Each structure stands twice: as C-alpha cells, then as structure tokens.
Image (cartoon, rainbow, N blue to C red; front, side):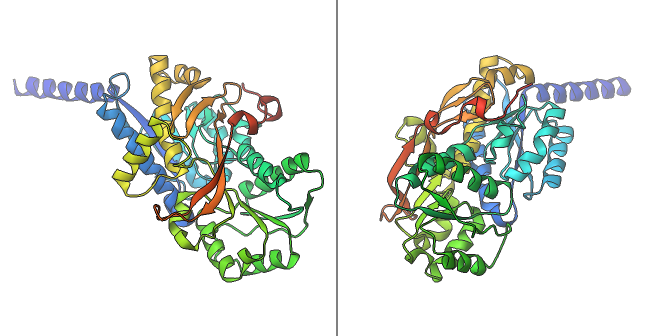
Length: 401
C-alpha cells in the first residue's frame, strides 16, 4: 500500500509540474548587465519586469502567466551565444528579447535562425539584422541606425555647418553611424564635406584627451557623435573641461538623449546641443505613454529611458501577437508579429512584414534646462515620422527566406 501511495504521489507531483509548465510562457532576456553599459541593461530589465507584472496581474496571456529569465551578454558575442544556449536549452524559454550591442546582434542572428526561436531585438541598432542578415525569426521593435541617422542628417542639412567629422565607438555601431550620416547628409546637402580626421576610440576608453585634441585641432564646423552609455558620459565630462563645447561647433549626439546618460551627467550635459534618442518620455501625450511614465517612475524613481520603453514594448508585442495568433506556437506567433501594429508608449509601432523592422517616429531635440526635471530635457523637440526616415525594403538588402 505504501508503495502504491508513493507512486500515486509521484505521478500527481509530475502531472502538477507538467501542468504548471503548460500554464506559463517563458521569455529569455539578454542585455549588458556589467561594465560600461550596465545601466542600460538595468533599465531594460526594469521595463520588462514592469510589463510582465502588469500582464500577469491582468490575467496573463491566453490565461498563461509570464516568466522571464535574464542573462548578461557582457557586450561580447561568445558570452551572448552561451547565454542564448542556457536560456533555450536549460530554461526552455519560448521567446527571446534583448541585445544591446550591434556587434553582438550581428554575431547571433544566424544562430537564432538555427534554433528557430522568435527573437525581438530592442536596442542593437545595426541595420544588418533587418537588412542583409534578416531572417524569419528576428524582429526589431526599435529605431535602427538608418532611421536615427537619417533624422540627424535632416537636422544637419539645415545648419550652416559644411565640414563634418565624427567621434564614435570603434565597432559596427560607430562605423555604420558615420557611414550612413555621410550618405544621407550628402544627399540633402551636396556641399557637405567629410573630413579625414575622425576619431573611433575603443569601447570602454577611459582617456578621451587625444581624440578630443585631434578633433579640436582639425577645427570642423560640425561634429557627429555616436558614443553612448559610459563612453559618452566620460567623453562629455572630459570634453567639457577641455572647452570642446565652447568652440561653436554644430554638435549632434545620436544617443545623447538617453536618460541613462542624462541622469549620470545632470548639469554637466551642455545645453543647446542636438541630441537623439529612440524614445523620449515627453514626446507623446497618449494615455499609453502617460501610464507607462507614471508607473515606471513610481516603481523605480526615475524617468524611463528608451531601453526601458523598448523592452517594455517588446513584451507587449509578444502579448498582442500571441493573442492575435490565439496560440503560443512559434510559427504562428511569427506570422502574427509580421504586420503587427499596436500603440506603445513611443507611439504607434508597425512591424514591417518584409524585413521585420519596426516603423515608428524618431525624436531629436536640443538639450535644455527645466527646473521641473532633474535632467536636461529636449527643447525644442523635433519628431520625424517613421515613414519619412525609414528606407524602403528594397534598399535594405533583406531577402526573407
């Protein structure tokens, strides 16, 4: 009798485990949680946790609760690949969300295709992953280099600056940002000139003095800066002391309006310079954005960054796609994500089915002081419609299989 009871109890326990597994949807999340961009990963994690908490409290997705697991990519392709394997084979996740580094994203998309796991990229901006490296399993919910830099070129074309140079990180993101800036600005202003003196410091550089000195000695009219996270923070602090911002250059920082950077710099961020972002918490007066900003600030004590919004929006994109498909089947969810349109805090997002790139508005503005906020805000603010700054699919190099 004891053996029978033991067997029955074991079977009951196993069936409970199996049933519990069917009642959950697992999301694996990979960001940078250490090193120069750890704050970005933290903001993304907070955005995901807020979305997961909201969805679970409202009944989940098709009656299933969300579970999320986080792994650190360390901004390195090999560690990102190990993180993917751990999440897929050990945690048995259904979907992946994340990736900060363009270099990492370019390295992992082919492996994601092999695993056949639907993945939403929320940060890495290289055009390649929805361009020449596109595949049916990879989507991007956020603004890419093409979109952000085309907006920058539109701003630059209206300034008096003719001779341009750049300071950017020495990897895919920095080099591609400069490549596209030259391409788009030349189209808009054929008189634009691009200098041979450029600066591409390694990621994690501590001393920017030689790069700043080199650029200042070249005496450009305009400087396009694609540094981000801790690199941009260090650069701004050092450049400020060296008088870089007092020379009258037209300055465009492609990611200068990241709240992670603005909180770190506060009044050390100069006013009156053009900065871009992939979401700005004051750019959209919709109820969806108002709810997100208030909920995020109440929970975490700061205003949300674009990385927080992008991660938050990705979880909701999965929710809407699963509900649209009425299934968690991966192939059905992929079909539902293709052409999905929904209202995110950033505004309306449309996922183009041909290349899986999100079409959404792009925000730029000039840094300004406002006593109501602890960080620089954007004033004036310029919003570019997504269709105006997104190249057609025919120009992306994407051939979806």
